[in-house]
Length: 421
Image (cartoon, rainbow, N blue to C red; front, side, top):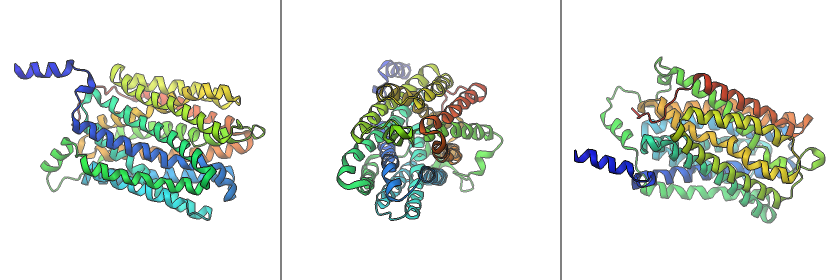
């Protein structure tokens, strides 16, 4: 009876007071890692106009290098997912941060397109690994009723990192050029000391590690194609393809779109205005990430996905065919809100579809297999832009968002409140 009263007392407190210090620490570690991952990855988009000029690249090659990074990130997600299931979420998270930090900084030494391509490939391994390790850490550490909120906060840190990349570029490009921007990318490596010092492995993973037999295979890729879970592997991968094609096809090129002259189909903004427009846009993205998490815990994962994918598909064409700076400023936060916020649902939903023994592997495979196929988006948009302009080329991403909404309607089960096993 006393235990029942205690549980009732806990549930009546505000949700943020129900979270333990260890759970907050896990959230901090994952959020910082993801925020700085975003900053390092998006630095490329911020300096792409200058890279194309200095290294003599056209838009197709600029898009191809972004595609190359996404392809390697897919491999990184699979590798680090297996490592996270075998050796722990926290260890995998730290190593992934070090990898993407070091190789971002090394990009600043590139003298040729080939050198830059090789370094961006290694950077991608860490980029893909960070998401899967951080997602597994959060979804296993936080209670089911607040899992969506936690992933919303973590995903929201991507918007902060994107905006930080714009600010860093705006400050450093006039002083040190694009090389100085990349050198700043080493900063995230310092975060690993914070993670190592205070972040514990989730109890459910520790319990699984201590009780499994020597013959059990943790993190086996084969097991995510078992007949019991293969439908979730296929669905998760398909949703990831559509969601990430839309995101990377759009947001890789938006900084270049804003900086490109009006005569070439862009908005023709100065570096100062470009920075401001992107920061404001990412405020909208942050609100979208957080709102998705809150809504997913309130009305369910399925309805929230449909809302965000559907409105993203509608808003993107309006943004792409707008060249007026004021209208872009007003539309930008809305496009980012719905065109980014849905990522908050992936970590929670995939965690709720896969068991603990293969959770990080399943999350890593679906999210990053999707990223591998969606990696063609920057290249496709860049290629189309040569004939129709960047704004018009963005319309292809709207189709991808629309397909994602249809997949959710037809195939995704509601997993709100599901306890992990």
